[in-house]
Image (cartoon, rainbow over all chains, first blue to last red; front, side, top):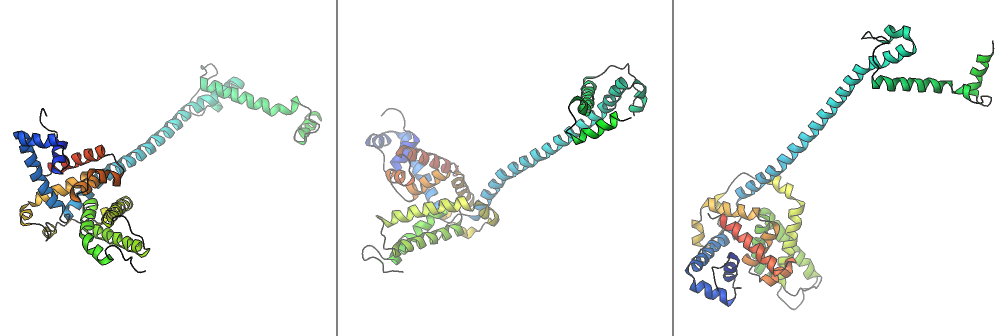
Length: 176
Length: 171
């Protein structure tokens, strides 16, 4: 057998499961023989210790090691929860600010377009005129308003004789 | 309890012969003396039930060891948090080595004693079981592999790693 033995071979020898070449090698090889004697001595001590009662201090160390695992997990979960809360709040605030920034413009410009004389009344915080450039938000709002108004006038576009909701306005509109 | 079977040892003899061994095994697998005693008692209560049913395993020592390993597994799985809560801060010098230890064991330093137990706790459950059965109980590799459902090669690897880790506690 060339070269020194692996640790597993020495353990097998210690437990009487080694093959004949391994046994012969340990007898012939001085370093392996020393390693084997060291292993046997160590295992004698370990065996003696483990045949006794486990010390309570060792339990404590295990509980601390468990705490060392549990605590970071809990802290991480708490951190993620808090971060989620903070991000949610800040997004809400940012959304509110954006809305607050766009709302006067969004309301003033459509009104100015539909009713040029009412511009100043519609814009509460900023003085806008009908000549101000219209933003995409305002444009979408205008479209929304136009859709809404056109839907309100739906009674005019269909036969209202069977619709009580439309019939009153029909008659009231036509009756002088 | 029904009459014990006429063959084999009687229950009391079985208890006297194997209680110490099972207790030691439970101590290694649970690392808690009080809980190990509970589990050892539980194992012998199960043995009593088995005995009462006129059942007889092929080998009582092996049956007891297998039941002890399974009971320790259940205990570890179910109540680690209870053990964590019940853990104490005191280190009692009388806890080591016990009265059965030889004189040479009494020179083992306290730190070393603690370190070895700590190393044992850091082993995986498989490594602890393999070490306990193969080295402390003296089972053959084949017997351990059959009992734990592992290949012989895997048993050898677990044992080598366990011994390597435990020896670090001596350094």
